[in-house]
Length: 244
Ligand SMILES: [Zn+2]
Image (cartoon, rainbow, N blue to C red):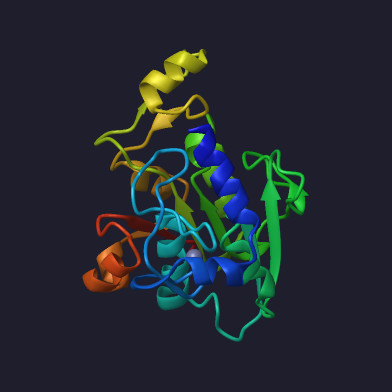
């Protein structure tokens, strides 16, 4: 496993053009770095096959979310917007940074590279600040997720939207806040820093915070053939949350 990490570290440092030459191919396509490649690599942490783009390091969910932004939202139109991106995905961040119409704010609790240090259960911005909020795979780490959802709702402008993604791995959400050891969290939730398994009722939690939620299946966003080519599982979903 250590060798795989080292190899990936080495790969990450190579210039984009070198990687494009090494992985050049016709079979697959990454919509994040806009490159045709011969294969996607296994996910570095989970080992899931056909996951990781060797060029930009996008994962399946990054590719799907970016496609969703492009095809189903106003994110890239010419109107200026203020966007909050929590725990920014490194493959997507440069694309958003380059976007001239975005006043782009990155936030994280621990990452010193983020523009603001933020506890999402207590956001330091006034009501109705943002036109767009994107927060992916963070809420499963947060005990008071209802507070964080309420804070996202508060700082979002009326009429605007958020994409709030979590892994859904059970039918009904499982959480037990008496669990207080890494071993137990690993056993119950698959990672030492996860505090629950979200189920199909995740949508209800978002609605309870005030959002109108529409769930888009991946194959509603792009065709099944395109999903295959971009190595995105068709059962993946995007939680599109509007503040009315
Ligand atoms: Zn890529």
